Image 1 (cartoon, rainbow, N blue to C red):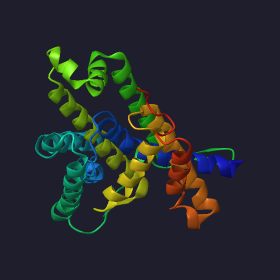
Image 2 (tube, rainbow, N blue to C red):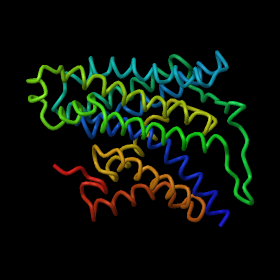
Image 3 (cartoon, rainbow, N blue to C red):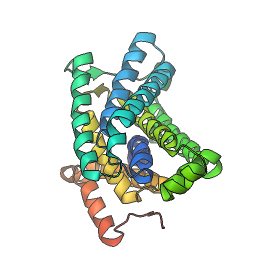
Image 4 (cartoon, rainbow, N blue to C red):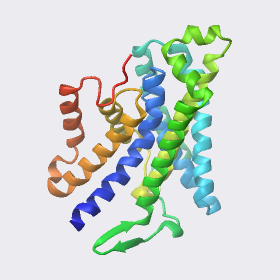
Length: 286
């Protein structure tokens, strides 16, 4: 029982990290219909910039703020210069964002060098609690709380605020929203920036979790994020959360019981879901 609890906590923490990346992708991919393969690059830039701020200032709170700011700035530049010219054309979106992904990865090596960089856990988040034979690592619990917090905030904005209503209406009928005098391009720009900031937040939270960061980490986690978005259903925030937990738990248990299948389990999971639910587990109707 203790083993199952420990594996579950590890899986939930990993799932929350994937959710933070997938949450931004759900906004950009699911709501705006933009295939942004550079999303992982923004995730990696969030990790590197956050670790740099942390090592410079010694404040993990400032590191999180620095990563979010990096995500917002890169999101602004990416949407303005890269995405706007290719709205509505998926082939061009795939090609140009894949190219941007490579550029972002190489720029990381230019700025911070080609070697891996170590990342320490803040002292107040280090260590663990023991509840009987169950060990709860503080930092993993912190990641789970942060993921739930982001989920709650985004759900509240999308469901309970005027800007959330505008975003949802703009996705369904962009022309109608523009006819009401709302600059939908500016709204989508902010959605893209927020999605990028969430990716960057996921990156800086991953850094102490894994202990080291490297320039290729973006592509590795971006694939998991796309798997989560597809399993959960495009545009569905609850779907992304559920799918991320599913992927995290499956990876954790398989890594312990059947290590040889731990890398393939996510793809197998996606294949099984798509066979029975081609639009994902929580596909949005309409």
